[in-house]
Image (cartoon, rainbow, N blue to C red):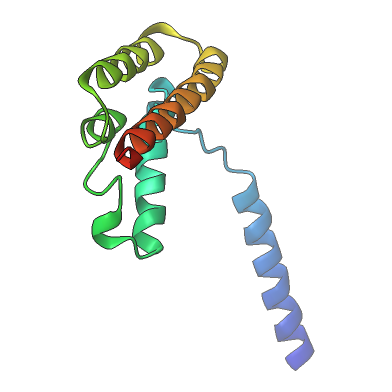
Length: 125
């Protein structure tokens, strides 16, 4: 009797799971319609990483929710900041995903160059 009950329960569960697998769920179109700005997402991720690492007040991205806010909080000259803003707007305006990816690499190199120049200026006696 126990085996009949157990087999019935297993059969009902197997049947219900196979019916559930046949449902057709459509992905939402809202996520696919708006492309993600990778520079803004990168600022969010790095800000979280610095917070988790315990940077505290030394976090260079603290309070920045997007790339433009991160540029404003940088220790760089106004000309360098303006150059980075122009690059960001070009990146955000009309490029395809592949072009944005390659431009993102160029922008990252540019940011590193600005950081190095700023550090060299601070280290001058």
